[in-house]
Amino acid sequence: MDTPRHSASVVIAWPAGRLYEMVSDVTRMGEWSPVCKTCWWDDGHGPSIGGWFTGRNELPDETWETRCQVVAAEPGREFAFVVRGTVRWGYSFAAADGGTKVTESWEILPDGVAAFGERYGADAAAQMAARQADASENIAASLHAMKQGVEAGSAAGRTEQ
Image 1 (tube, rainbow, N blue to C red):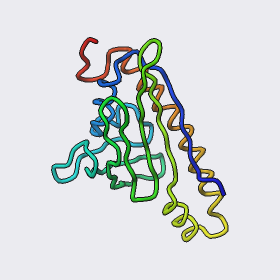
Image 2 (image 1 turned 120 degrees about the horizontal axis):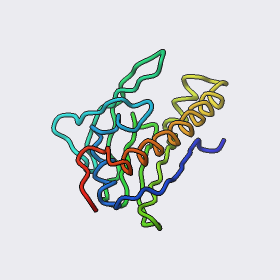
Image 3 (image 1 turned 90 degrees about the vertical axis):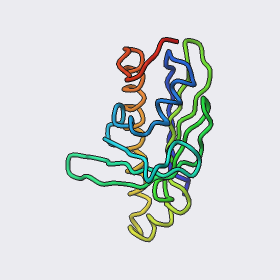
Image 4 (image 1 turned 45 degrees about the horizontal axis):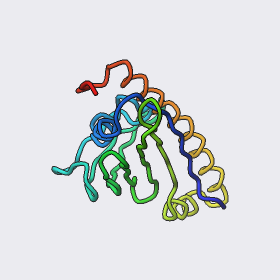
């Protein structure tokens, strides 16, 4: 089976460094994510490799928290984290006409594939496909909200370019 993954991109009229600062401040995740409503750094950690944070996710019928570890923290280029060692979320930033191309990505890691197999057995592939469809929808919504918020000037702490 192919590794479940999805990514999408949008160009945002803002510099890469400022977008990186916004995304790597995980306490702001709820400003654009349709599922992750709030995050906080654990025990004094911050946006550097090895840093830990917890995120609270909400859907109409469930709320859950996940513990995440930063695995990439390259200002202006990439910020990524792994959720429970099973799923990798990432953001990359590249110069583009009109601003910065922001790519959000999601991937179930090998340990995650194994965990789905253990939990769902013969239904694991269908369960992972459903998560991939959700990620696709949520990434599109996140990038749209991020672009709208930044370009409308509503992103907290925005300074002029």
